[in-house]
Amino acid sequence: MAAAPSATSVHDFTVKCFAWCEGVQDASGKDVDLSTYKGKVLLIVNVASQCGLTNSNYTELSQLYEKYKDQGFEILAFPCNQFGGQEPGSNEEIVQFACTRFKAEYPIFDKVDVNGNNAAPLYKYLKSNKGGLFGDSIKWNFSKFLVDKEGRVVDRYAPTTSPLSIEVMSCTTTCNLFLQAELLGSHYNISILSLQKDIKKLLGSS
Image (cartoon, rainbow, N blue to C red):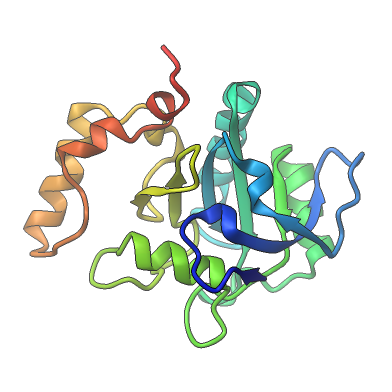
């Protein structure tokens, strides 16, 4: 995975893709220039197959993708084994699991590190643009970054945030998240501005 020396957007990165689950595109090991996603809204997620959050997240990610894939929405899934060793399988096993059990149709990339010295450049960029609760590091599987059509990172969501709740961030959802962060005494970057940063608004959907 590589990036331009002075990356200014997600579109400046090149990543290794493993496969699209539909099977017609064998992208194994090929470089994918993320500039190909210019003009699309992206949800970037670090996934795992053996996590307590796996079933709910994969199910809702597939539902989101099915609903918005023809409106300029894309999910980029990055397997990661850094949290409890919950993604131990090979790329082939990971894709088989996601495609067979959850009918995932979005691209699944090579397994990466998201924290530490060997963290993928893309993830270093994502974290530097949107810090998380108690620091920038990714805390667990299924952390989510929402990226606008220009490749700007506009929001970050915790592993426990339901993918479907990102579709439309209601006042209730946003205020609850804000209150939780305040009660924890954090400076987590959640505010009422999140109302402007849900998937439907970024896509321009009514």
